[in-house]
Length: 328
Ligand code: UDP
Image (cartoon, rainbow, N blue to C red):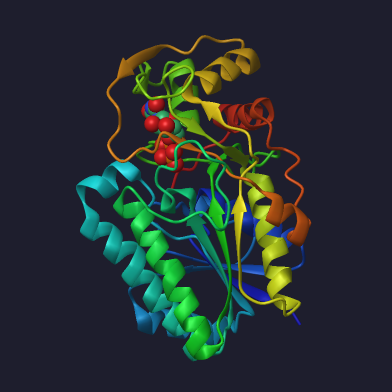
C-alpha cells in the first residue's frame, strides 16, 4: 500500500524539493499549502491539498482522506527582518499554526513528525561551532517561534507518544540539479537569489547588510547546505522514525562558515560575472556567525551532504535561476 506523507509547505522552496526526494524514495508526498508564499506550479510529485494550518477542520479532513504515515512540517514564516517588525504574525503563523497541526496529527493517530527548525534558535554564541546541545537563545521572533514549536513537540511526545525528528537547518541554498523545482520567493530576501538577480541586472545591486561585524572581513558568517542534501536528511529522518528509533534533534550544517563577501567571491568564479554591490546597515536580528557541527547527523543518520560545496550550490542555483520560475 502506498505510504502517504503529509508535507506542509510542499509548494515552497524546501518542501517542494522534499516532495521530489520522498517520491524517489517510494513515498507519496501529499502537499498541504495555503499558497500564500508557495506555488502550485511547484507541486509536481504528488497530490495537492490547499488549506491553512489554522483551519483545524480542514486538517482533520485531509488526515482522514490520506491517512498519512507521517508529517513533514515545512510551512512557516521565515524572514528575520519581518519577524522583528511583526512578532505577532510569527507567533500566530508559526506557533499557533503548528499547535493546530500537531493536535490534528495526534487526533488522527499520525505519530511520526519531522520538523523544520532552524539555527536561528541559537542566537549569538561568540563563534563557537554549534551543535544539538548548544543552548538556544534566539535573537528574533522567528527563532523564538521555532524554539517554542520544538518545546511543543517534546511535550506532545511525553503526553501522547508523538515521535519527532527535529532538524535545525543552517542556511539552505542551491536547487534541484534537474531544475524541476527551485528557490522562488516573492518578495525575495535571501542572499544567494538576490545576488544572482543583481548579476543578471534584475536588481540594481546587492546590499551587503553590515561590514563592521567582528569577523575577518566584517560581514556575517553562515553555514550553507545544499537543498538536495537537506531533503535527503529528511528522508533519512523519516526512516529513522519508521524504524522506531524515537525522537531526536539533528543539526544540518557542514561545519564550514562563509562570510557574505566570500559568497559573493564564489559567485564571481562560478558565473564569470561581477556582482554589483552596495554596502548597507546591519539587518536587525542577524547573528554574527552561525556554523554547525554535523557529527550527529553523519554518524547516526548516515547523512552524506555531498553537494554542499559553495561552487556547487551557486552553480545549481544559477542554472535554476536562468531557466526556472513559477507563474502561480
Ligand atoms: N544578506 C545580505 N544582503 C541581503 C540578504 C542577506 O547581506 O540582501 C546577509 C544576511 O545579513 C546574512 C546572510 O546574508 O548575514 C544570509 O542571509 P539570508 O537572508 O540569506 O539567510 P538567513 O541568515 O537570514 O537565514
